[in-house]
Length: 359
Ligand SMILES: *Cc1c(COP(=O)(O)O)cnc(C)c1O
Image (cartoon, helix red, strand yellow):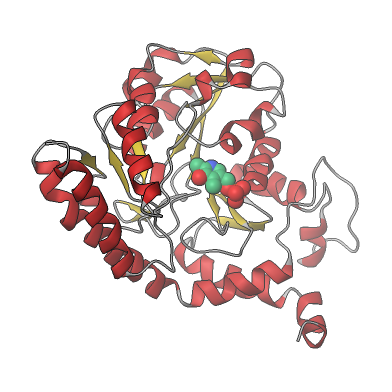
């Protein structure tokens, strides 16, 4: 099968097909399929031209890729606390720590729940900063009627195996600011003007800038096309699972025993489902309780401001109390495309049993 598709791979049949599909969702953006969302972030850092000493403001509560891409070019990360409900960057705090060195603000849409983009956009406009959206977990989610990733100057989405829609490994770089289009093209094409050559504007292509091979492999693109074709079923399936989790666990939340993801969000493209316990020891007990029943749950994340390298090179603004509390109490429940309703029932039964035993 693989060799018979050689001609298709060679002509990037699958990448073109995937891009064609994605351009319906992002009609005015310039889109680049990448080998990962991590790669897409690196591409953005290089396109913006991050210089040593530039400051970037981002939530401490995120995955390492968000920060690494920029730090690799010498940026100094400034970690900010999150909002207790959305788990996204606390805009109030951001407004207080912008300095002349600040170059970008990164909004991470935790679990696909949108950050307060309207306020962040206003701040960026006022201080001439770039707004970058880490929508790695946000494919299929919206802010108002705009898809996540399409609102900032640039955004990224992950098509990793752990995300809603997958290429097994892959990502999408979304450039919305037209002033960045040409440079992004060059960075993506290993520092050449190949794009212009493809479009017939120049007779040959040559080295014009810095860049790298960020491209998604055709094998991954073939998987992605199949997933994109079925994306509505995937979204519906996940919506069903999150509704099931939510309605079954709601009585526990109403009784004040635990907290759940925001109710308004469960009808979106949910990347994850979590409960929040009252403290760290309760979370550890719940995790152990579930593990004994062969149910795998996990926490998120070691906050960047308290991680080994983050302490060494980053700046932390303020108390970080919400981040610390969330990192100690949030527990992610099993949530993936192959999960079925019976499994959700088994997990929620176990959680109910845990809390009933503690009353
Ligand atoms: C998964 C994830 C990434 C990285 O995505 P990859 O495709 O694995 O590189 C970056 N940021 C966040 C918030 C993520 O959840």
